[in-house]
Amino acid sequence: MIVKKRFFSFTKEEIQFTTESGYTFDALQVAYETYGRLNRERDNAILVLHALTGDAHAAGFYTSRDPKPGWWDPMIGPGRALDTDKYFVICSNVLGGCGGTTGPTSINPRTKAPYGIGFPPINIRDMVRLQKILLDNLGIKKLRMAIGGSMGGMQALEWAVTFPDSVETVVAIAATHELSPLAIAFNYAGIKAIENDPLWRNGNYYSSGQPVKGLMLARMIGTLTYKSDELFKRRFSRKMDPERGLFQVESYLEHQGEIFVNRFDANTYLCLLKAMNRHNIAEPYGLLERALRRIKAKVFMVGIDTDMLYPPVDMRSFIQRLNTAGGYGEYREIKSYQGHDAFLVDFDQLAPIVREILKNTRTKTLLNESPLV
Ligand SMILES: CC(=O)SCCNC(=O)CCNC(=O)[C@H](O)C(C)(C)COP(=O)(O)OP(=O)(O)OC[C@H]1O[C@@H](n2cnc3c(N)ncnc32)[C@H](O)[C@@H]1OP(=O)(O)O
Ligand SMILES: N[C@@H](CCO)C(=O)O
Image (tube, rainbow, N blue to C red; front, side, top):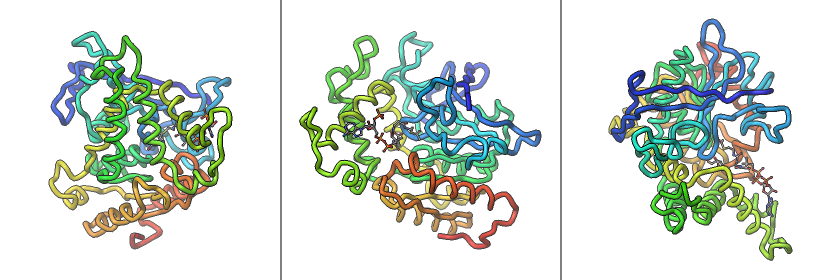
């Protein structure tokens, strides 16, 4: 499937967009891709939401010579779980990202320089409110499904709460309604790794070069949380990499850091980690139960048994609270030794779960009369 990156831009005279922190952008751009066709009833749209370092390129190839397709390609396409013969699939880069949507690397029209750390503090709701503007522009009033993993799952849950009339089904994979203290702590370690690099220069490094060591270390810390003990044992055991004089697992971590600095920006990483740390669907409503009572979508949480960041027990507990609050929630689980990143790898398990959810939420009455927890 050959695909194209698209852009939607607007000025504050056309649409006023103010973050929850109170900043109004003079102008905004959203990078997005679409796969499949919107039907005449405009009721077959599925919004795919990307994780921390993902982007709008969820599926397909830009050219026939591209070595790699989009990051969820095995999930999206003709006959795949998100079947583009039936559904119109949209994926956009998040607000604050560095994949074409306005973020810290974008030029601030007021200063004519990159926003850098002058980019306003944002949260997951801000990302979702910008996606809603994009969908309004595409003529989509109600989503058949909002689906994503990790930070993408957080956005999917925010869709259910912030725009209850605009989404039918929500699938949040390896995600949470609020970040746990452990996840905040890991993110803080990543933040400090960048900020303590002298090349970070308080975020003013665009003419001098990235804080490479800090960003590499931040990615290494993140990678530890995306994998699992079992994965590292199976893949590396205690074997050495003789060329580098390192344990293979050390060499792997170095490699993850090295490839990351070539595709990501340090201020963007800080902006998105902080947005995740702030994530709490209950915040505007005071109590989680009040937020849950707003939800009209059928919500499916998909846990990963080896995920140290978003443990299944927390995801089950969220579903229980949703059902107690009168909503409809079900829990599913991927059994994997891959850890948190399983949602980017274990498609043989994820695809059937998503197919089943799409099939069973098609009819007005669900096949499961009572929610499963
Ligand atoms: C949903 C989102 O929006 S996120 C977007 C998806 N993310 C990305 O595509 C980029 C980030 N990538 C990832 O997170 C991972 O590659 C995943 C989760 C997609 C796949 O994970 P895995 O299949 O376990 O592969 P992983 O990336 O961990 O390891 C493979 C890489 O490590 C390298 N590697 C493996 N062992 C070693 C070692 N001992 N020493 C050095 N390098 C090693 C491989 O050569 C390979 O390198 P390459 O990526 O440059 O080709
Ligand atoms: N490894 C993925 C998932 C993080 O939650 C990423 O880098 O975006």
